[in-house]
Image 1 (tube, rainbow, N blue to C red):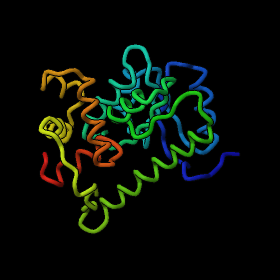
Image 2: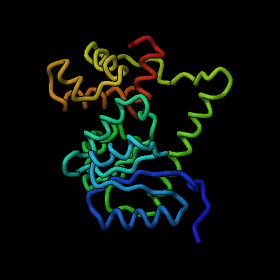
Image 3: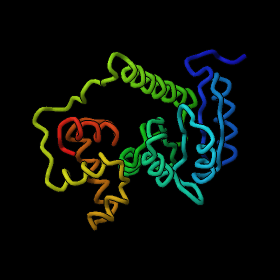
Length: 215
C-alpha cells in the first residue's frame, strides 16, 4: 500500500544514466506516493519538459550527451520552467562540487550513496518551500516579502556586474563569455555573494539584487 504523504499526486522528473539507480529510486518514490517520470540524460529530459512540467526535478550530474550542469542552466533560463525545484544527485562530494552545483542553479545537492529516507525528506522539504512561495505570490496583491540580508553587505564592482547578469537570467557560462573570464571565476563570484548575503541560490540572489536596485 502506498504511503499517502505530502508527496501524493506530485509529479517528479528523475534523470540519471544509471538504469539500476533509476529503478530503485523510482520504485521507492512511487511507493511513497509520487508519480515519477524518468529520463536517461539532459537532452531526453528537455524533450519530456516540452510536453509536461513536473513539480520537481531530481537530476544526476555526470551524464552523457548533456550533463546536469548544462541541463540546469538551460532550465533556469526558461521563464516557464525556472520555478521548478531541482535536486542534484552526484558521486562527487567535495566542497567545490557542492558549490558549483548550487551556484549553477540547483536548490539541493545530495551525494551518492544516499539514504532513501533522506532523499524523500529533501524532496518533501523542497516541494513545501515551492508551495509556500506560490501561496505568497497568490495572496493579496501577489507581492512576496522582500529578501532579507545583513544590512552591511557590500559587493565589489565585479560582483555587481555579475549579479546584474544573474538577475537577467543568464547562466554562468554566458556571463563568463560576456566578461571574458573563465566560468570558474564566475562561479567563485556567485559563491562569494551567496556567502556574503546568506542567501541559498541564484534565484534568491537575483531577487535581492532587483529589490535593492543593484540590477
